[in-house]
Image 1 (cartoon, chains in turn purple, red):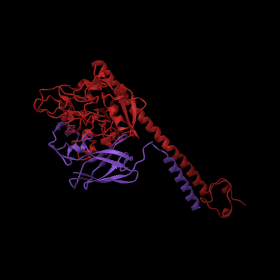
Image 2 (cartoon, helix red, strand yellow):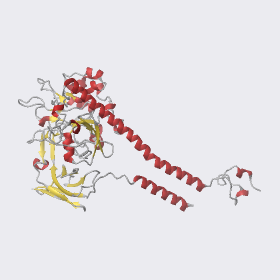
Image 3 (cartoon, chains in turn cyan, blue):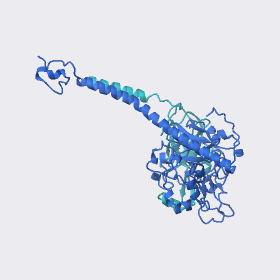
Image 4 (tube, chains in turn cyan, green):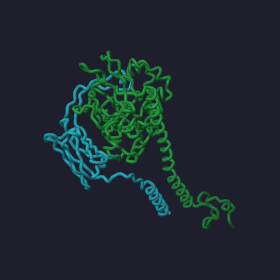
Length: 149
Length: 337
């Protein structure tokens, strides 16, 4: 009888899976992309890196404290579609006015000018029109490092 | 001789009977049969549940589309009265440059056109929303369901959230020398910008291929990171949040310098793709937040001509930015998105 119950559960699980499966969404096939961003030899410790395709959707990666990134197109860490990309790196730090702690304070506080923006990687690399960086994503998992001079 | 009790259908497993131990009962369920029946019912329910959930989500999507449609009609009614669309924020207390420059956001201005005349009449256009809310704190956390997408569960917890944001462009930087303002990217080509009153004549790309207002839940969906306010508060998106302009300097008039625009509370650009997770966001990036929604696969937009469309998140970026701009000379056929 245990085997019969097990078989029933198995059949049930297969059915559930087949119900969940098959929700294709017309999304392109993606390849994992990760790498390291350095500026003048040192790891960039914050910011984001954006891969702009010729056609389609951007892939974005957040740069962690060690300078590593992993690209996301749709879901966390899913990579980018194979192809050629122009790349921008936006890494900056703002030292500004103290933040409001809740909605009420926020209403009363008014706009504060951010004191200053410090670019960790020069601003030129953060703009599509001026960034010289490019990358090519292949269909296998990619490791693409950027060393900004 | 058979027991009478067995004939009325009581299982020997429940009521064991010495005389019936080795007999097969005629009219009783065995445990296995019971389990099989329960399993079959379970499978049927499991098949039905996703369909029920999908139907509920479809109803919520319809409600969301309807909200956007109403906003589109409100913009049109406003245009009929004033012969222009409302500005993202109108700031005209020019002599009052010592205060923070927050004027009258779109979200107050159109209240009179979505059956909220009572509130709109109470609003004081001379002092701006920030000062007005300090006098009327009861409206700070007030809920306006027509500004909320029912698929956004967080409205239960944060009643004052607004899920709809005006489109502030996304293709042409407001100032090519300095595209990044002190609160993120600024563009010159959206339907809604501070102190810009667009007309239909300005929308030369065609009003049916230009975004007016769209959904954005980025902050409530992903949090805000170490930036503005507190991420758990839903960040910078209460219903009243319009935009602002930081103190003008020198001979500037309020809101004349795009560098000092702060748009992230009420407006979004199409620079980043729908539902991009671009965390962490810094406090000087909040205008970079993208459009997006809790509906799977895209977000709803109401266009300048008043029609509501669902834009897939797989849309080509050039097309998406073209839809966000009012006059960039792109030609977009209606079937291409």
